[in-house]
Image (cartoon, rainbow over all chains, first blue to last red; front, side, top):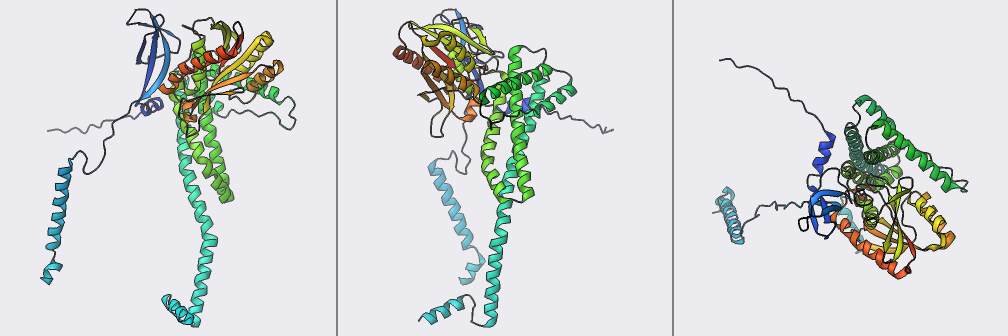
Length: 120
Length: 382
């Protein structure tokens, strides 16, 4: 059986723009549209080359009129941070039993130590 | 009693009033004095320089990354990589020498001229980098290049003072630099974050003033009054309002001062009021998007534009009122937050209230939206 010693070459390319945009992955650019006739507002994701006061192709869902960009802004998506701890997501009764179990183990350990056995 | 207590004290420290004990004590005192006098300074110096060098690395990363980002963005317009790098490297070393202040006469005029020359020089650089890009893209590229230049000079100056402090072995220089470093670091971070907005061409926090003006001139036909600045005449509750803003949607600040000066010379005493809207730096205790009213020209230029407004409004006795939208320095250069965008409607309402109160029907008011107009068009569709 021949085992070929083929080596795979991996080229690492550094794209500064991609790394910058990666830093903003939690940010969402939003566009706020407003209907030119009925004033209905609609929020959607930003598309390239859009600017405030630009008339867009989107039609008003209410009156089918033209819509313009009222504002462009960013929203930071809040990530739900999980608490990192020993007793996270544990009911209080379970924590109590864990603590009792831990303490009893320590007590047994101390009791079994040779130094105490000598006095007995 | 006292003698006994002294004896106890001596015994505690192993001092038994013999000659050797005395010698030991003197040696100990000399050792401690030497330690405090000669070691304390170098230790502090080491502490300061360690902190400064840590921040300096961060500044260097920002400077180098920003250059790479600019090259990457400009690479879309210019395929000649070597030429592009050469132009960018030259641009990063660009400087302007401030006019002489010893003779204050005509200082503002000289500064204005210098700023115009500097602005034109930057435009020439951008034309070399991206000759085929459209005017709006060029304006955004200019913003990106200016940010890169700012980050580069922040790093260079910080490094210069670090080396000077090290060479002179001066704890005073190093301590001052360490104090400044926190501010420089935050400023550099804010500039670095601004790339996201300038590359995409979306409004930044500073654009809030321009956005207010754009909202007011939405249904009108704006015309260019001076370099990169547009005006538009609108009717607000029976009053004629001339709205001024930088020409959008590219990243420009325009020349609002010059525009207002021209309008004042044109309408003279017919103008009842000038209202300026701009972003202002908030105090840490203040909330972003807070709106405040005051008097005076709200414009954060190096001087010439503000001077023109003050000079011409004083000449005809026209009151200048300002509305500012508070935000942090980092927010002013970063992509606009929802809170700031929401404040635009409130400011427009305030302007209308002020006009109703202060300007008689049929009267004339100038409204100037100050700030970078990146991502903000002029009127609907344009």
